[in-house]
Image 1 (tube, rainbow, N blue to C red):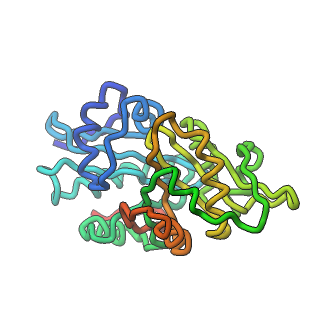
Image 2: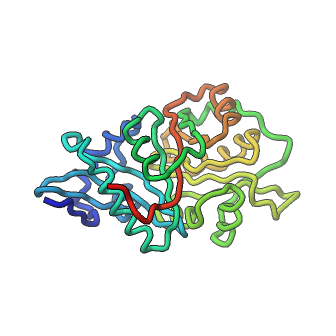
Length: 274
């Protein structure tokens, strides 16, 4: 029987919660409210012979498709279902005007890496997911530059995305999902929009993307996020993308490396391999 797909609905949460650990990130299963607000609207469930075969969570940004999760049920792996799921996503993304796509993968997940490279994707950079406690950030040295934090206005999105080479529309997508979006501001240079920004999910809790023009700017950006943390939640996480300096500073104050992964990107093939 051919692989069938359908948009996810709120009642698919139990299926999602059962399959999410297969990503092997060590992260807790997102709560149902997070699933309903941020993940389900961008997810397809795949079924074969009446049984769940997997799910695909992907976003359609301005010209770029961002593949967030690709999960095939364990008993169906090695049968080409991952490729079939991505083939369906590629058709949808091309129809939406996307010419390129990207995703994150653990370097040690060789079957997935081989699949993505077969589809023409190549590694762009590596990232480090870090975990720490809010009080630990008090040990970060403040930069000489007197930086402050402020909420990102929608009309600033394009300039910030360009400054940090982000897919167009990523900030708007985060805002629509309820993320807290803040940026660094310099009172002495108010037009500088490329100093640093973060997209924070207080329910996770963590910030991704978390981008800085200089690792020394971590202290004021984290200080600006801290008031948005849930009361009584001391733990926090960020992802340092292609930023070993930031990773080193965070590890120096006691942060732990939770996960390392690679960012892959490339053109969406017009003719997908069989």
